[in-house]
Each structure stands twice: as C-alpha cells, then as structure tokens.
Amino acid sequence: MAAPIKFPFRPRGGQPREDTTPKRGLRRYLLELKESNKEFWLSGHAVFKLLSLGCMISALDYFETMLPHPVLILLICMEAAICIFFIFLNTLAINRYIPFVFWPMADIFNSLFSCVFLGGGIYFAFKARRLLPKPYLTAMILMGAAAICSFIDMLLQFQHFRGLRLRKW
Image (cartoon, rainbow, N blue to C red):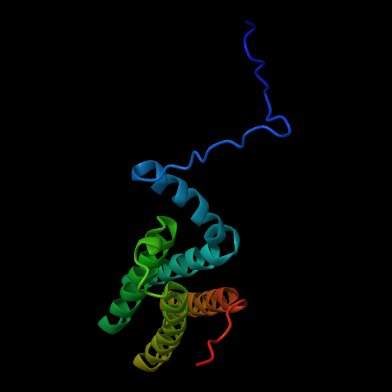
C-alpha cells in the first residue's frame, strides 16, 4: 500500500485545519497582546500619548531647575503618572481582562481632564510669577504642548464610538 500524498497546501474539498489558537495560559496572552496592540500603536493614539508624556517630563525637568510652586510639580507628576498608566494598560492589553470598565470612555475622560488640568496649570504658573525666566517660560510652553497633544489624543479616540448605536428602551 502506498503512502498518502502530502500536499504543501490544502487541496479543494480537503478537511479544514483545526483551530490552533491556544485556549489558556501565556501563549494565549501573547497572541492577544500581539493582536490588541496594533490598533493602539498604528492609529496615532500611542504617538500622541508618548508626545504628551515627553512634553510633561521635559516641563518637569525645566521646572526643577527653577523654584516653582509645589502645585505645579504635583500637577505634572500626577498627569505623567496617569498617562504612563494608560500607556501601560493599552500596551499590555490589560483592558481585556477588566471588562466592567468601558476603557475608551475612561481614556477620553483622562485626555479631557489632562488637557484642562494642564491648561489650568499654565494659568496658575503665569499668575504665580511676575517675571518669567527662560526655563520657566519653556516649561509653560511644554505644558501647553502636552495639553494640545492630550486634546488631539481625545479627538482620535472618538473613532471607538462611530459604529455604536444607542439602545432604544
């Protein structure tokens, strides 16, 4: 009896391959990680998050060379920490494992509040000093750039809501 013919491809009418997607464990997580990151990194969402984070860290560095009000340092550190949290959340696909929070809405609110807080921080920094030395002014400009990046990030996130329809009760 001859050995069966092995095709390098599936011939027509042949049996479909069985699903080789891992069902549990680290392999499944790595597959989900690979698939879920594409939208975050390719849609421009991650770029503006990283730009905003870079501007906040640079502003913090410039403020540290001066002696600003501690509220400004606290504000920038808080916004940078929250931005790092959302980058971490989206990069490692942790949001898939916490389904009771609607993450796109939480991310939109984060970007909105970040924009408002950074704008308020600029206003507070402007009112706190009469003279604006060059590092202080540069830090204020970087805070403004971070606020603009947060606003653009918020606008990019509205694509999650395009296909949604409201339920009629």
